[in-house]
Amino acid sequence: MAPKNWWIVLTLAMGGLLLASPAWARRPETGFLNRLVSVGGVNYNYQVFVPRNWNKNEKWPVILFLHGHGESGDDGLLQTGEGIGNAIRAGVERFPFLVVFPQCRKGDWWTTAAMETQALQALDQTVKEFKGDPQRIYLTGLSMGGFGTWDMGSKYAGRFAALVPICGGVRLAHHVAGAPDVEDSPDLYTTAARKIGKTPVWAFHGGADDTVPVTESRKLVEALKAAGGNVRYTEYPGVGHNSWDKAYAEAELLPWLLSQKLSPTR
Image (cartoon, rainbow, N blue to C red; front, side, top):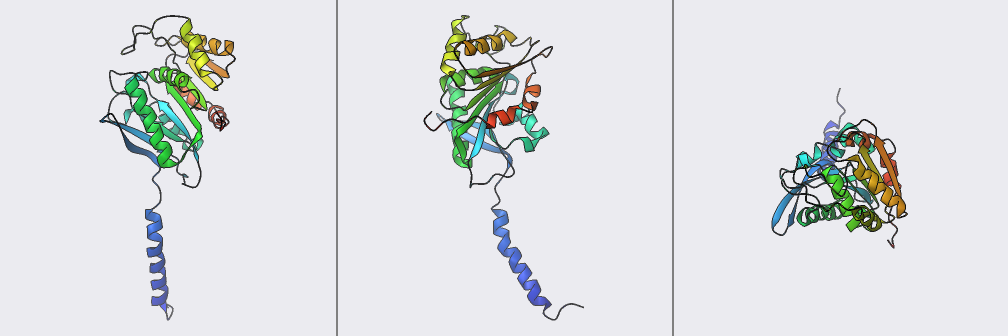
């Protein structure tokens, strides 16, 4: 038998639901989100991964990810389908980071001014929108994005708390499509290492890479050591160009990143 004042109970319950509805509606979006950045009148699509436990009351570490040549385009989607995007989908609980996914246009390269600018502006927008922590911003990329990581890491050494270049370098073989011509000189590696300075670096490369020579990472690592840099290097024997799946699955990588932080005076 229903209680005598059943209608009061029902009214209170409905009122509670109505009061709760706005809070539910205000629950922040998480996961992979579409965003847009405009640079010089040109619009670029990018994506941001936002952890499911994100909240506006704390600052969040941020990873800027630069994809490889095969994910170039303007759809704003392809760049999440390789590398760190796949690693997130395989183990989302491992990533308490905001992850920014800009997309390089076809026929362009991460080391050109326009692509660099749109990537950094996407990063800035993400930090502002999702309360990213300026002291914990990390840069990583694979293949073409590995080259971009070495390049941006050397140009903006005081901005990134750590660099994770994967199968990248500073001088490309001539057969790599779309690669800018770079003079072959030992000074390239020394110059990059000196600019990167003390920024922590963990580089990865496959020992059997037939697209980007493994000597690129080896030379950069040796140059960093010679310059007194803070560098770790993992080379996978017998692994070809795709060394990124192994790299992003490394159990120590994300804890290592989180242990790196810029000092307020840096």
